Image (cartoon, rainbow, N blue to C red; front, side):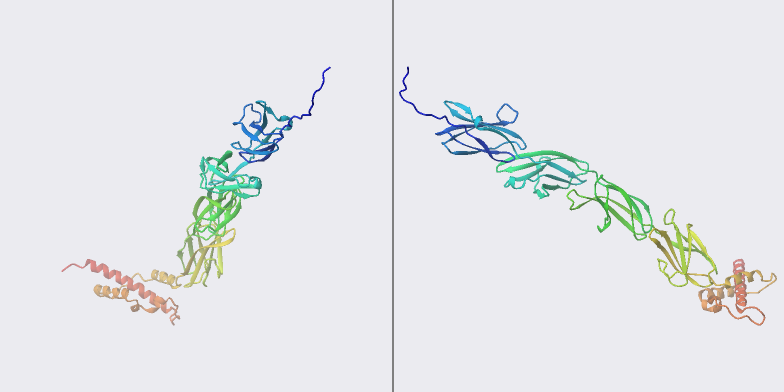
Amino acid sequence: MATVIASKDATTDAFAVLSMVSNTFGSISVKWTNPAKSTATYQLTYRKTGETSNSGTPVVIAADAGVVTNTTIPGLEAATNYTFALERLENGSYVPQTQGTGAFSRTTYSVDLAASVGPDSALVQFTDLGAAVSGITFQVLLNGQALTGTPVSTAGKLQLLLSTLSPLTTYQWQVRAIEGSAQVSLGTQSFTTSSAGTLRVGSVHASETYVSWAGTAGGSYRLVNASTGAVMADSLGGTGGTTLRPLLPATPYSVGIESLRPDGSTWARDAVASFTTASSVLSIESSGSSQMTMAWTPAYDGAKYVLTYSTAAIDGAAAGATHSVSTTALSSTVTGLSANTAYTFALLVEETGGLVGLSLVSMGTTPEETAAHVDAMVADIPADFVTTVQPDEVAVSSAAALQDPASVPAKVFSGSLVPTTAAGLKTSEYVAIGVVVSLIVIALGMTLARRKPKP
């Protein structure tokens, strides 16, 4: 029977417990406590979860008994799950510490990338992790070129507006996290800018014009005065049409279509279209003692005109007009006028907003009533009426009369009517007969002068 000479209780060293301290986009920090009774050497390995090979060189650290060891594994990929294993050197071999949870897996931080586009810009954005990534800065690259702008935090997103892009063009953008000297790619994404809005001018009237546009579905557009920037129509959808009013007749306009940039802060000028609003020129075509015919150039197809007139002053909007005529023709004869009377005519057109003034003719005057009497009396001159004249004297006296209207009886120019004489004829009728006879005499004298032989 064996005899126990001596005995001593002995306890093996406990397994080390590995835990995570923190992680970033490109690193994971871990810690463990050395439970051994003396200094021990540990080896930390890591690999992408699911892979069989280690991702990097194992980290070897000697730790004193009971000391907590912290270490950070850099150079990791964002949004990637890694499995860590801790081993302790015992009798020349590394012993896994898995029984003491000396292994675990963790995933590096990640962000979601998104881009919203316009014709000349794109708003790129990614998840804002806030305090979790304090001290980390971000850099945005476009087609491999780093941009100088700093992403701005808005509603849980970090955003940056990329401008001066070209419509219908594909770009690639990337986000980097700057962690000390390390640059960690957070992802790459492509986007294609949208087409620029187009603008087409439809029917052009005097005070209104129809325009239509085509843009991107879901886009926000507005129409502006391209010269002044004043908004003419707002809150427009991706495709549609609208009537711009009120406009001024006979006025050139340049209208621009603008699209709201993806960040909602500014507008991009997509296209410009120009037109001149309709107009018309009113003129007196003919006149008589009791009527006038007015004519005008066409304003546009299908226009409905209103011709107004008055003996009083009126303006282009027909204020003060006492009579009006509606027509779709390009002329109108106004009857029932008074002889030798000045009239003002205004041409307007009927449009959605009401009557719009196009043209104004001031002081169109009807002729004197005595003109008709002269024509009648010329026909009544006796056929055997004979007058003897001296041609040279007639030529001199008629030329003088043409140069000096004062030498002609004043009543011929005044147009006023005179009282009837006792014989039943008006004095003005005698004067008219005298003028006609004088004209006949002048004509005869000029004919004889041409036939007179030279000495």
